[in-house]
Image (cartoon, rainbow, N blue to C red):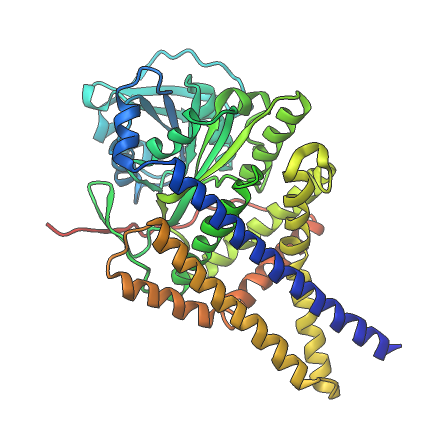
Length: 477
């Protein structure tokens, strides 16, 4: 019996690995197809700016950035938002009852005073105490919302939606640094779409290690410490292969909560962000898709390959684990709450293909890997390991992961997603961390994912804690 279980498990792992590799190759193919389409149909930044800047039909955008205890970076990041090059936008900073000097710094720096404001509670959020605007005309685009503490970013985002009045809104994190041309790049896809564009995502990378001047990244650099370096490569894979690939079949399952553009009306009719959710960005995106499908409306989702946003990621194992445990709980929550969409063609390619892929290859993978690891330990102690087969399988997976890294670097180079400082050294760093990833980073993420699953199953209380910011490097004068 045990021999039969052994062979069944080995064949299961082998088959699963082959299917996973084939799915990655499919995404590689689709990402290249999407890039070819972009190369043909999307002009350079200056051409986009020329057409959109002078047009009265260019849609207005509200940028919503919730802030809770962000005194270390709040002024730098608001200044970054001020540097955005777009003809018609407003910045809505939502102070979620910060207990540090976040609100005080905003009031003093931008000369804010309370103003009367007509607030329509379109989506659920904690009460808004007051709305502040600047007495200085050069800060006329800035709106600061002071609200009761909601406990999660989703509640702050909803408060911003309640205040904004524009056709589209961008939801971002207040620690993010947005590229000046970001809105132009995203809005070009909106105005040139033959179908209503309800969401646009964009490539977002780590600001750790970058040099910032006047709220802008002036020198893009791969981080020098190991934990952020692993994440930088992970981000590149996610945005330039997975998301760009899925957008090619209009099946983008998630627009990052760190930076994404949405149709305000569709987001409101879908209920906005769920303040109780651990994966509010995926949850809202799936509810928007459900709303459009159930009402019989056609829609489009798209992804911008160029880097439009930089975010400061976890610098330590502790903060990284806390983040990934929360992400794992959020994934389990999505699987549970949106299970009717899975394998359901009514919801288009997202229901028929993408959500099954997420379930099989992202949700199940950590459990299978942990089981396989424990099974391998048992086989070692019982002398049941076929070392030739084990080494062959591991070598095949390892070589494939290196191939994926080389392809990601090629995508980054061909799309000109990032203008790296010391390009060759930057790419060499990314390649080197890929060689170490299967031994250090991937086991850590697998452990965090399983721990997150267990916390969700055992219904353990989760308290959202923001990442402690160190701030980015500033260029010396």
